[in-house]
Length: 113
Length: 132
Image 1 (cartoon, rainbow over the protein chains, first blue to last red):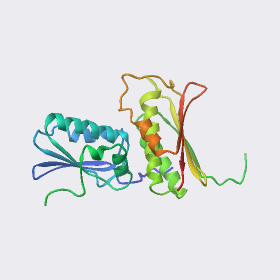
Image 2: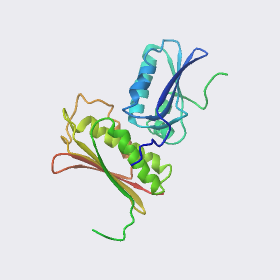
Image 3: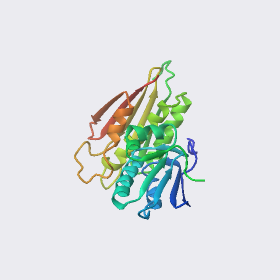
Image 4: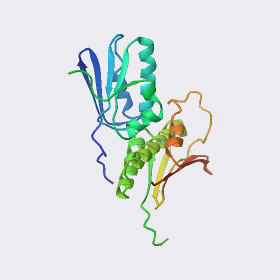
């Protein structure tokens, strides 16, 4: 009956970086935590780039996939750019399984200085 | 009931509310890690458990959530995972939240998937995952 999470606690951090909105998500992304990511990306302006930093995301299920699909559709509709710095392991495999890597730009590292 | 079986196993229930998703996923993770299951199988099973429990939370009950039960058995050649609820069973949900991705993802990750209707009308998802 351990109550310690298997990874680090869930957290969402938002930074502005050279005009990009960088949203770093840590911990585990599921239906209980997805609304916090949603809230961090709601006011992205047209013409900017939204970079989701998933390097420290330890887990994601279809709640995260669904969020990415909605964001991709929004980016195309509202005219902002969406990019993803993906985690290795199961998160990256799920992104590939759902072919999100064919719709969203996947970066190997955070852009900029 | 006695026997020489040393099969690591887990049986755990939770009320079918969103908090059940990380609670049961974490319980499965601890059982699998204790049994020596590592990546990539561990990650695949964790996703499948999360999807199956999320389905029960979103679809099994209407106003008054009942229970969702997770069982995990680690055998020498495979891991067997069942997520069962006592809810309303399989039925169309035109207003369903979610993107309908759960079962396709489970089907892609598991070796076999079996959907069942319980005697009380609930739904069960039985999954097996081959080791190696």
